[in-house]
Image 1 (cartoon, rainbow, N blue to C red):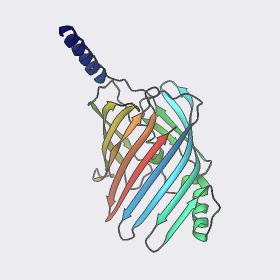
Image 2 (image 1 turned 60 degrees about the vertical axis):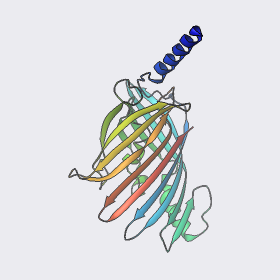
Image 3 (image 1 turned 120 degrees about the horizontal axis):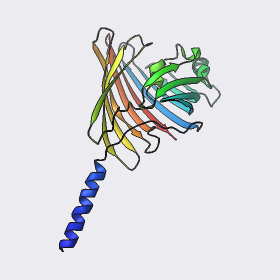
Image 4 (image 1 turned 180 degrees about the horizontal axis):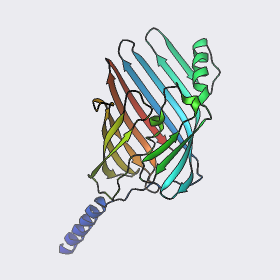
Length: 252
């Protein structure tokens, strides 16, 4: 009985040690290997003109090269589906189908410009975005550089154990409303699917006023530490209009 008790204690202590093992997170995507990204963004605009929009984008991403600690990542939009409900008016567009009505054609003229367009992102192995090269065709389509800067979680400089947190911030250089975002990330746990990172942050304008928030989580691949799944909710309120976006991203 004593031997079994000691064996059980050893296993228990070993499990606790494993569960609390620190991880030094570093991106290590396979160079040249294409990955498929599916991003679903549900946006609810509450204000004088309320709008609900569901956008589903299918993208192909590949890490094309590594230079020191920096990766060059190329992201190409392959498909896009949009459903818009503006109260008295609804419209839809699917890049994989022929436009059925004038509304769909109008949306097609707008969104078809970004199909097969390549976005180039330079990112450090710690998940910090250094540069986003956005084609001119994305101008006026509701996207800015920050829309593609969150494909990876912000990673800590040092190894962390479950429950430990770190801070990060980044500027929104081409967003007219949001100047920068302050964010806190927490390594929650290692699950069967991957490493779970919780995020929570504040959006601020150029006068350092808080105008919005972001909250959600990333699940990172255990080998590459790149995003496998992400669920984020952003909320911003300016001049009586509130915009809430729920973003779900999966990478295969």
